[in-house]
Length: 206
Image (tube, rainbow, N blue to C red; front, side, top):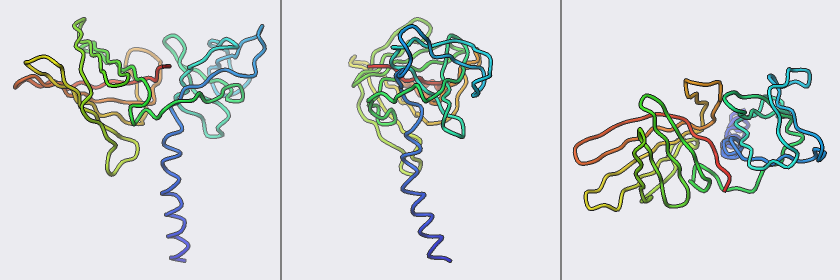
């Protein structure tokens, strides 16, 4: 019995990274006629009210998560979210965002800020004032497969830094009905001043 339990536990441990990396992820619409659309529904059922649509050739659509059966995926449309049939969505080739191999767009409120990450550069805007940072280091959490962190600095003589901690978890911006699958906590430091901010992130198409 103990041996069986250990085998099961080890099997689950090796399966965890695959599950953790599944969503959020970018998808392309497939299998929809050129004169048709893919409906976005209020709930993950074919009879649920339609709240939006995707064109037959749309690409780079972020699927935030799936429901339990794996047949429906949650996407954002305007300031709300809805469900699409994953039968008509194909995962796009992409890197894994926890390794910063995928572009991220993050934001938060009170104060309003935004961050875009791509390659080795991070652009951060706070109340209309933009600062560009160069990525210095990043890495996964040693004991949590769904978390990672990064540090970046400015090239100015009087350097400032930004550190971010991203996690695979449900997140809300508090202002809309949009749903996110990535949360972020930021720490900005310049000399003896430090500011901490929290927000949500989305995946962007390269």
